[in-house]
Amino acid sequence: MGECIFCKIIAGEIPAARLIETDKVVSFLDINPVNPGHALIVPKRHVTSFLDLHQNELHVLMFIARRVAAAVAEATESPAFNILQNNGRAAGQIIDHVHIHVIPRRPDDGFSLGWRQLSYGEGELEPLRKAITARL
Ligand code: AMP
Ligand code: ZN
Image 1 (tube, rainbow, N blue to C red):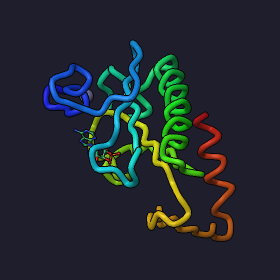
Image 2: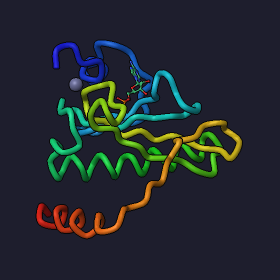
Image 3: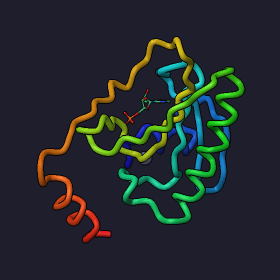
Image 4: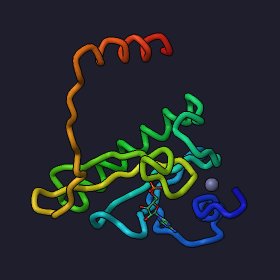
């Protein structure tokens, strides 16, 4: 936590292009944007994973993400946007302070998520569905 860049931004120890702040959440522009206007929404409490967030933090985080997404899309005249949230190194998380990305998108912006689409093998889907449901 002591070396966390986002905690330092929240504490005002290092600069950031701030967009909005509440008692629970702060939003600022990503320093290396996928597209101009790429914004981050961050809880003030230092936790690493989406799973660590309390219900009230989740509520505020998503509510502010919605407001930021609308403002970013309008300000950058983008007809589309992605909301992304990475948890763990394998998922591309670099900063260990949970955050939501809002990325404005245009049809010709040259960015691709590289989404792939596998298929389930015979008899694979139902055991997995049951295993997940049993944990909910
Ligand atoms: P992630 O890969 O989901 O952990 O994303 C971390 C994001 O934080 C990256 O998109 C970085 O460009 C961004 N970032 C890192 N340092 C800063 C900073 N000082 N101010 C704003 N954004 C930052
Ligand atoms: Zn932190």
